[in-house]
Length: 72
Image (cartoon, one colour):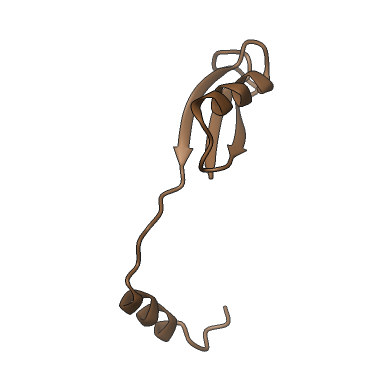
């Protein structure tokens, strides 16, 4: 998942940032199209991409064992 932070008027104003979510495999053209979709003068303020963490089977098993029976 990619989260775009967009200034709708092209600069920081009282309306704040608009956040737009896109699939993780979005291209640069799709990102620019999403920014233009916010408004005619919109400016991209930031891009946040979800981090993917690789866990080993031993780490997964340890996590499952540690939280077995925990229903919080």
